Length: 212
Ligand SMILES: Nc1ncnc2c1ncn2[C@@H]1O[C@H](COP(=O)(O)OP(=O)(O)O)[C@@H](O)[C@H]1O
Ligand SMILES: [Mg+2]
Image (cartoon, rainbow, N blue to C red; front, side, top):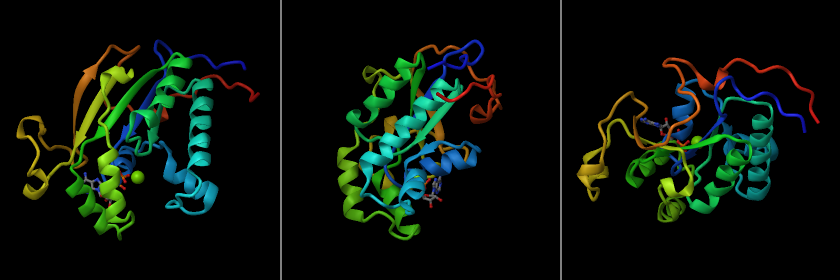
């Protein structure tokens, strides 16, 4: 397939959210006007229900297809909004980004389980608490050795004292921004830094190309 030119001066970036349900992924994107490739949005599109869990393979196959298409179209930044809790779940995105000459970054929503449970309760017990605890047990924070060029950690703006208990104080971050604070843990050089204040998801459209 003919590939659209890559964004001027840089590699395309794939930015993968990692975090439990309720950790604030979708809110973070919405507050910044970012339209991510979202597994919940695809559930709604494909199965008429954004909570449908019965077609996981279809949902994620579609998500990866859309990511490949965006990379072929030369889109400079693609965000992925899904839990991506394990290395096995994250591996395909790392591979796809690399296959297209792109950089891969993780955006880790490091909200304590108690915070996620509380938010989950407030939105109407969307995910059963038992399932939330199971998911928390599977969560493996993203690590540089997986192949990420950058890992950014987002923490809740105001963790309660209860939520903080049991966590090491030394690795908790300052709150900020209402949407959490970012802290870069691993920061390999990328093609081109994004100028401050610009929105990656609405970068200029590259020259049009015909679909295959
Ligand atoms: N930074 C935040 N501070 C307070 N509440 C938040 C924050 N981020 C998200 N929430 C609330 O938590 C709930 C879950 O957030 P959401 O973004 O849907 O999480 P996720 O996409 O990770 O499942 C929502 O009701 C949202 O309003
Ligand atoms: Mg969400």
